[in-house]
Image 1: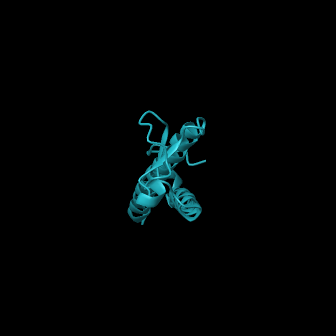
Image 2: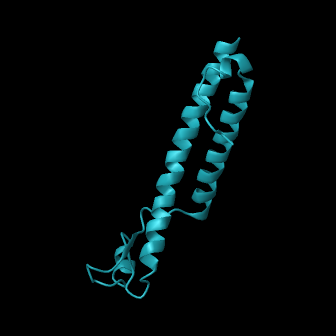
Length: 111
């Protein structure tokens, strides 16, 4: 029965890594925007509608936030939730593998 548990764990780890990559990508957007916002007096939001873009600075050296990459609060919450759920599933799948089998595997440090 343990081969099924190992396969479940491998799939859970893959899902967790995918969810982590999505979360890191989103956090990079937020971090970059936060860095740009340090210079908020010159900050420009790009890729807006033409009417909104007309209100923005034309300074090409101004710090920018790309509106098409900016997540909603719901998107942020969903990505964080997906990662937490995936981590919980990976932890549960790891626990379902018999101790004698886990000893021969690399500990994933799912703490």
